[in-house]
Structures are given as structure tokens and as C-alpha cells.
Image (cartoon, rainbow, N blue to C red):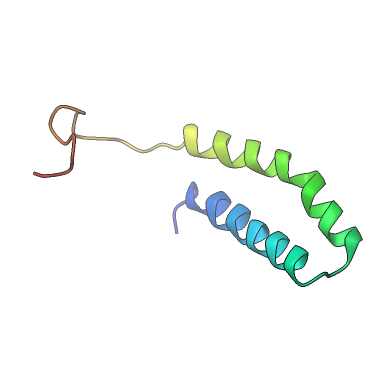
Length: 68
């Protein structure tokens, strides 16, 4: 697994746990904790994706609709 995919999977998993905890009426403390750390997790995810060392070989004009 590539380094920039780990934050995406982790933040998505925490989001699913958060939504499930709300729907299942689980511990309010766990729900509030997940809600309180979510902005930091999203910022970390966005930063890691934007700073990922991924080289793109095609331009926007070449693969606009990925129909090549």
C-alpha cells in the first residue's frame, strides 16, 4: 500500500465507525471524541494527499474523460 493511501483508508474507517456509533446509539463519549478529532484527521489526510510524490505522465487535454 502506498503511503498516501493510508490516511484515506484510516479517515474513512473512522468516519464509518462514527456514523455507525451514532446510528447504534453507542457511547456518547466515543461519538464526541470522534467528532472532536475529525478536523485534525481531515487536515492530515488532505495534506498527505496533496504532498504525495505521485508523478502524472498525461495532461488534462490528453485524458480529459479518460477515453484514450
